[in-house]
Length: 317
Ligand code: FO1
Image 1 (cartoon, rainbow, N blue to C red):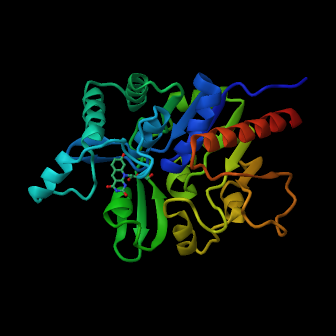
Image 2: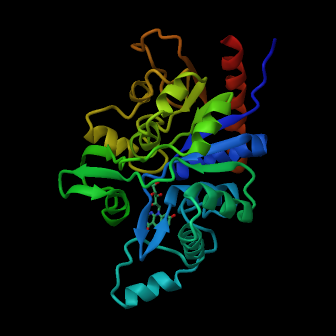
Image 3: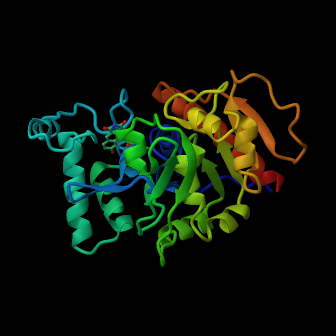
C-alpha cells in the first residue's frame, strides 16, 4: 500500500533553515512542525532574545528582512542609535519593530508561560500556520571556545566578534533538569518524516541533537538531511570556516559523518561536483536538487522535491 507523508517535522537553526521551512509550510500548512535551535538565545538589556526562533517565525509570517536574513523588514533603528549615542552597548543590533517582539516575549515569560507557549502565542498573532517549537523550555546555551578569546557565549562569538575568532571546540550546555520540551518529543513521535534543514550542523542542529532522548527518537524515523554545503561553501554564515578550523572538509562527507546513524537520505545542490566515490555503501540515498533558495518559488520547489523523496523513503521501509 502506498503511504503518503502526512506530518512532517523539520529541524532548523536560523536563516538558512527558515528558507526551506517557508517552502514546506506552503505545502503542508498546519501539518508542519519545526523544532528550532535555542542554543543562541541570550539576555540583552533584561530581555529574552531568541534569534533563531524569530528568524524562523518572521520568515514563516513573511515579515523577515531578506537582505539581512534576521530581523524584520522595513525596520527602523532609533533605539539602537540612541543606545549608541549614550555609549551604551549596542553591538547586538536590535531593530525597533523586533524590539516589540522581545518586550512581549519577556512579558509573557515573566507571567509564567513557558517558551513553547509564548512562541505559539506570538506565532499565532503573526499569522504563522506551521508549529514553531523551541527545542527546550530550559536555557541550554551553546558556548564556543576560540584560539583568540577562550570561551565565548554564542552571540559574543557570532555577532560581537563577527565569527572571526578561530573555533577550537563547541559545547552544548545542559543545566541540570534541562531536556527537550514535551511538545518537541510529541511532535517527533507523531511525525511521518523528519527534514533537517540546510542549517549549520555545529551551531544550529548540534544543540538540538545534543538534548537527551532526541537521537533515539530520530533513529526510528525516516530522516532527510538537506546539506548547507555547496561546492565547499555555504550561502551565508560561518559553517565552512568552522569546518576548516575543526580540520574537516566543507563537504557532503562531513555532513554524512555528522548525521551518521540518523540520516536516510542526503540532499545536496545540483551544482556540487559529483561525489562521492569514496562513500561507503550504506544504503543512504543521495540526491542532487537545486538547494539555493533565492526566490519563493525556489523554496517551494525544493520542499516539493524533499517531500517526494520522503514518500519514496516511507514506502521503501
Ligand atoms: N546578526 C548579526 O550579525 N548582527 C546583529 O547585530 C544581529 C542582531 C540580531 C538581532 C535580533 C535577531 O533575532 C538576530 C540578530 N542577528 C544578528 C542574527 C543572529 O545573531 C544569528 O542569526 C543567530 O543567532 C545565528 O543563527
